[in-house]
Image 1: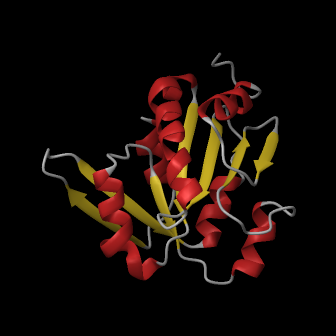
Image 2: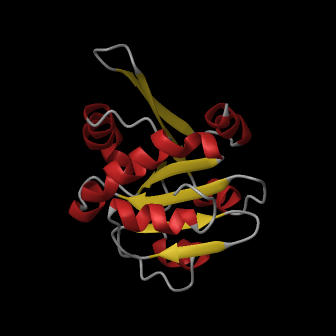
Amino acid sequence: MKRILLKVCFILFFSATITAQNNEIYSIEVYTFDQLEELLQQENNTTYVINFWATWCAPCVKELPYFLALDEEHGDKNIEVILVSLDFPSKLNSDLTPFVVKNRVKSPVILLDAPNENEWIPKVDESWSGALPATVIFNKNKRSFFEQSFTKEELYNQVNKFVKIL
């Protein structure tokens, strides 16, 4: 239900949908920063875990299973894991979509099409240098930003500060 609501709430400029061999459908939405900024300003009862990553970023790929596990294991606790890819939009079909299918990513994936990084990166968090991976965890009461890689335990401990999962 959460994923359907997320898709309905935001205007799509573009999306790529692919059906894998096992008939699972994978959809990647392409957002401008204005669209993403709306998401980053949500003030509701959901705890959002927004991970900025890319397929070419080895530390991002290494930690990705922890975000997927968090979503799968604790998504019923009003936690929304959203993966914001900073891959080049021209690589959507050649790199990003095959990666998402191969790794059976169930969490929502957004491809950010916002070429002026110097303009939008400080809007995510003023301390962010732009390095990947980076993660924002927030709800209506609290917000934290992390410019680092996580182990599964570290990620779960940080999320646990927002909503009890441990």
